[in-house]
Length: 282
Image 1 (cartoon, rainbow, N blue to C red):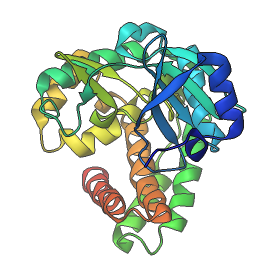
Image 2 (cartoon, one colour):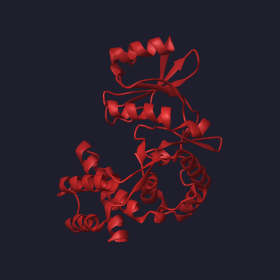
Image 3 (tube, rainbow, N blue to C red):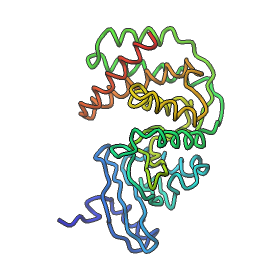
């Protein structure tokens, strides 16, 4: 069955692609079926490009901002922005060859994690210091705790509340961060690692990009932690207050978000994250 562009994109998005790219063909639909985000590889006269399109504008707008403000230091280790229109929910970037590290032979490779640590060190440039991050994070954690009232063990939720109450806010330096830095967003091509998908990029404390790696990979594979942190050059233990807040924020956020979208396995992984956070910090 032939897929029409009208099945995947709005009329405005199709028109913009025609203006930007001229004639193009759909080579592959790489969408993952979440949040109405389309990820397409298109063939053009200048070679393949990647298109992201969504009516959820903030995801596309973050991606465009990341390419314009954050990714230049990465050079060829990330895509480049070709065209973007935040109001139309459309971004076009260069296509990088390779395959996802997740699910491939390099997923548990210390060399892949070493390179990923080097790349993240390039991305993490300090922007400004703020006193508002901790209060905002604590408020968001409180909201997640209310919404997770029936989704996680009550002792874990109460322990999380106590940790937040005991936390003393401190100034935080904000960095350019990826927002979902893990092997599902790394590509490997001929032994070289690159990073993709900046739809969750933003300005946050640097430790935020290490939380999911800690739970999904470093806990059971300490050699990957060593390879990554040695190349990155810092350890989240240097920022215990920020490390606690973001572990709580991401574990609770995973539970609530996954429940809302009906992703039961991901919801369970959030509960497992929360259990580890309570065990380590409470």
